[in-house]
Length: 245
Image (tube, rainbow, N blue to C red):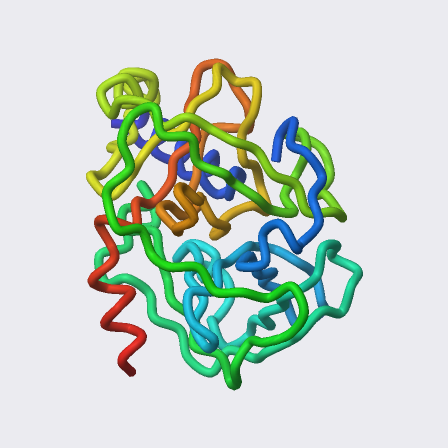
């Protein structure tokens, strides 16, 4: 019993630490104008998000674990964390009712802004029209750590990651006794590239559509573990219903 409890605590700690760009390229926001920064009241970027309509941003539910949605400031059109960009307050947040903190099931949230997010290098992106398939290369961008134990990036970075078979992903995570839900898709490049702490909530783009949301993983860029993403295909109905309010 004690051993099981300790394992559960260790897994929970690991998930909390790796809110999860390793070996990414620096890009200008003009090449990913849909990506948003989620900043704290102290103007610190802690998560990413994606603009899917002028007043709606999709992000990860676990970004709200320690802060209320209304406490975030959403910033668009900024390539670096120091640029002011265009700022909007969050007036309401919608967290998926099926979200579970331990295994990040249905790890998605929708933020409603206090005004339209418009300006230079700001564009919306449509939701994924089809489910991701193994072999699809998703583009993942963010301002997260560039090394597992390093600092967050001041500049926007991007990588391209291949989606892998779900069974392969489950096999790799079996040793840590974490149940990976059906809302998850896995991206893995042999540990060469990955999202990392601070990239959470950011976009996984395929075919010019938002098809995944950066969720979690064990460490960053580890050979043993793929990165885990929430599949838009599974949570699309929730997102569209949230936008009606």
